[in-house]
Image (cartoon, rainbow, N blue to C red; front, side, top):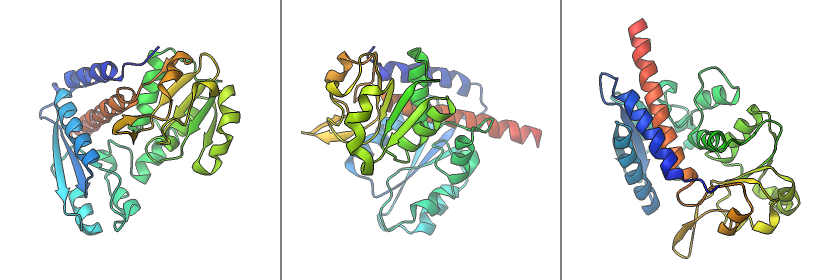
Length: 278
């Protein structure tokens, strides 16, 4: 099965829009952006369009390239938004960890603040799933993938893909191994034994069909540029070996964006409920 990420995303956004329509106001999702690359600009245009599909509004705050930590934090905590995202990566002169730590938990749709992430990591009731982990969960659910007891491999240890997916797989009782840049040479030995592989290394052609066992679930969340095109970590020929395969583009990415806005809707509804109780 080749996963149609755009179709899955459309269904999530449509369901979210129905819930948002019940709210007394249109939720505002603020994106704080510093020194965006051309790819970031493109990504933000996509997010703005998908926000509309979810019945929401994107408020993009472009700060100067030389913005200070204090200026970025001020934009993050300013009133007027129902959810806040900080577009990564931030320029090197900024203290990324300090900035992410100031995202209010009640507005953290991306699950990037330490408090929000810890709640997810510990499996706390009501904790939101980070968008890519939520996308992997959607793919497994819709593909009838048996995660519990499976042998799973996560390639890459990044904040947005590797770490949250590894924690989610652990929570689902998979026997999960994570491979980092330092241990990447073990891949050829590990891959043939795996039932589920989730890759977020950003390394074109890293995973080849001959590395995989027949029927593997291969979720490619890696993106990079090769010869002017956006490609994943897995050679497209892997689709012939995998029972579930996500193409790049059009696989995990659209679903993760849809899950981000679903998180924003959940936060908006929780805030309204809290205010009513108060």
